[in-house]
Length: 83
Image (cartoon, rainbow, N blue to C red; front, side, top):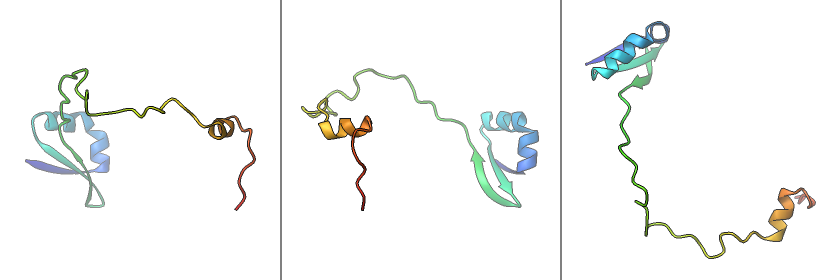
């Protein structure tokens, strides 16, 4: 079941609307009769598993090497390029 409420009603009755969403209802918030947002239950992410990306991500050998000109730019030791 979907119910549509205006922004003022949503602000006034947010707790009640959240209870409706927890019961499985969908709530549409409208401004001037036009839908602008939907309140739906948040998805559970589930338990995190350390190492689940093992073998799927690689780090380049030069990852920790930063060029001197880039380091200088962060320390404001270079002149800006004029185009």
